[in-house]
View 1: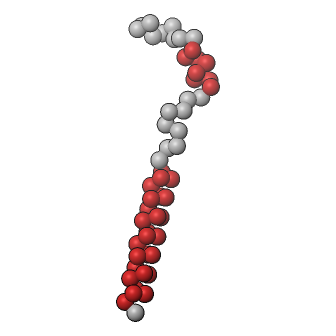
View 2: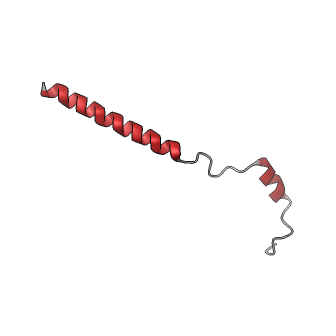
View 3: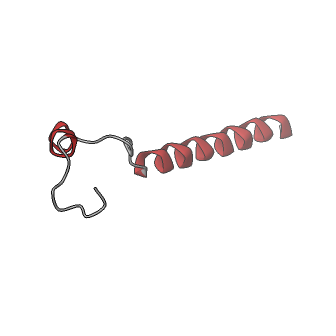
Length: 53
């Protein structure tokens, strides 16, 4: 009977780990490096207010 409880416990622990991993991945932003087409077109020409240029 202890083998059954061991399998159940390992399955439960694995399930909890899978749920926590999925939850943590769901909270992270997906596209940190993505910018919009509008931003690209605005910055492609350069800013006249940027004193470093």
